[in-house]
Picture 1 (cartoon, rainbow, N blue to C red):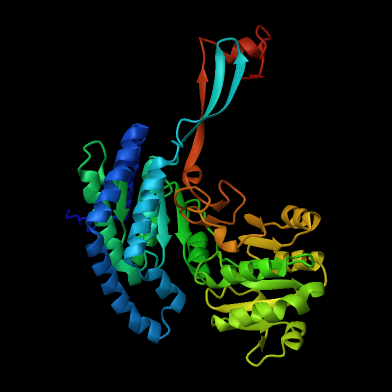
Picture 2: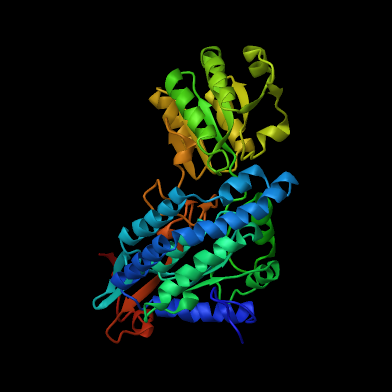
Length: 443
């Protein structure tokens, strides 16, 4: 059957997944140096093809403009779609950063001497084949490919139609780069093309080990409901900034502004500002002035509206507290205590990222210990919740799950472990009969 340069044409998704499984087993045999060579080769190819990537992205953006005008694509999604020369440089930097990270494979997590000459080791190993279903953001392709190949996993990618040309170009560049390295099968990176491909992908539990959806809540919910493969992802990023009674007002203004305005389309941007009533009168007017000057629409509780007394401040509803705007909109609520702030976060938050601004160490400790979220910060912008900023090199996405991986998912989230038992002819019967006794000594 014919095959495109991105890996799938008339082949069934099941066949492509089997080829990816075979590729993953080849990757697992490579040394760390060989896997790093893959990434440096790909980074060089991205640099050499920068103009081609930008041309493909411009084509996607032209096609998306009408969809934005018709309301089919949000402004936030369009912002994630668009690439710039700086964006290409960041892609390359992240790939090289992943190459410089320590090898995630073969790390010994635990060693137990069960008995003399009977030693059990727990060591990290690859997951195998990862499926990534994502919307809009073409920079997902190099981030995911770099993390997957560094950790010896094959990857099946399905991007949104709005970024089809950019994704096609990026995957072609990666595969051609792989073809220059004889030890690496190009099936290690494959692009899927249709919604039907996704439906097939979700049924392949024998050859796909993990599905990671990145995009809207609707996308994540759809994948989670329909997948027979394990799913890792987050549905929403409803993040809060809580300005405590003991906050430094100037510090709080800068953190709030950065959390909302620096990149409002990101899942780690703040959607709700909670302000202790004792500092509200001092803090809110100045903060609101700076936010509205930047184009932020404020939706406030009755106390906020009374305190600000500004035209254009809308009254927030229960729907607002539970909404991920991904836009220049911020819900604001005045609370009577840190307990009320924490209760609000637990009711409306998505367990993504929450931050407290305070100079009171006891209040900070209480917030950071009691708030249930993947990331809990003190005196820092919610925008720091990112794999690259955490030093993970890049990320596959952010998980709000409590199982396997939580928060930004980097190399560690793409590994599992196996037990290796080194013996010298021992049998269970010897221990069952009492002839020998276990030592169970941790080494």
